[in-house]
Image (cartoon, rainbow, N blue to C red; front, top):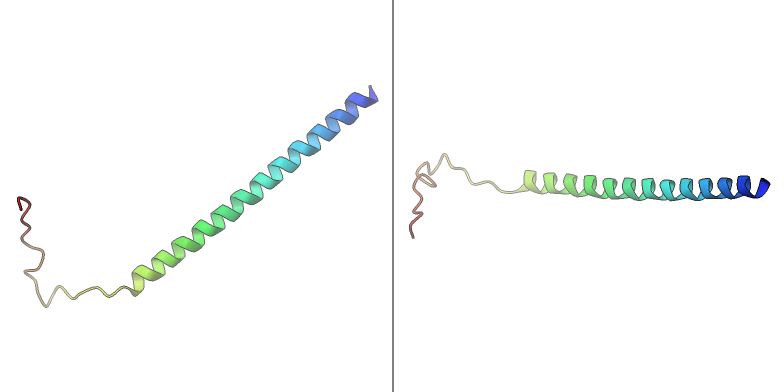
Length: 66
């Protein structure tokens, strides 16, 4: 009886460790994605966007048959 209790306790602890490691890896991945997203936003905000008001005809005609 005590062997089965010890085995269950050991198995439970191993499963808990697997879950903890999985959660930490998930959190690390989420942090990395958040950092990459912030970098993309910063890059887009710093991009030079041409002033279309100076040339309002630009982009108004598109030749899709060429």
